[in-house]
Length: 230
Image 1 (spheres, rainbow, N blue to C red):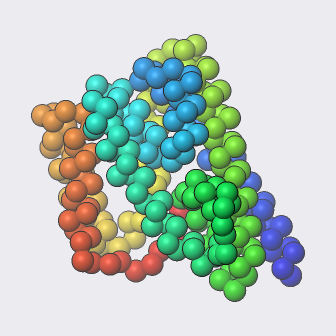
Image 2: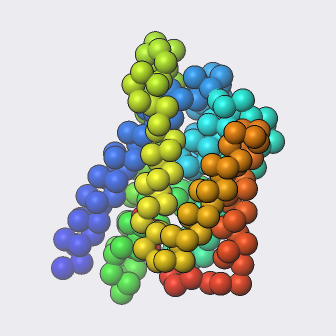
């Protein structure tokens, strides 16, 4: 029973890796359109490796925001990966040396979701889900990002292909599964209203930061029930 389960886990991981990697095409094209070159785009994907954070960075830069706003916005979105590590620590221990650093790099939404979706009593299946998904997404995302960046200068305006909406779609896909509770829905609505109100009058990137502060204030001292990230 254990072997078929782990085979299914690997299949699930590879499916998620390919589906997620496909978004790299949009990111690569948007990054070039925002003013980054192919090497800068590739380095951003390799080092940051957090889709939401990367889309946020190029989105702020493309909208004319300054480097500080772009970095801070990207960092806010990337902080969630650190919390994922807390939940994954019991699954991955013991882990040391280069494997520890590599595990930190591939701790993302997808690797966490696939790992924690496996039966709690089957630690090996959870480990397989984490590693196969994390490494699979890393390879697919970075390879397809380069392809998107190379094609970016040839496909014209990303808006003509609908790629200008990719960042918003990625954020919506990330947030939507977490809006199952009324409190989360209320916080999301308040953050959205504030961001929309500030957009006409504030510099690019500031509305996103203000929306993030709403969530931080609302969540301060109010721990939520444990959820499996999607």
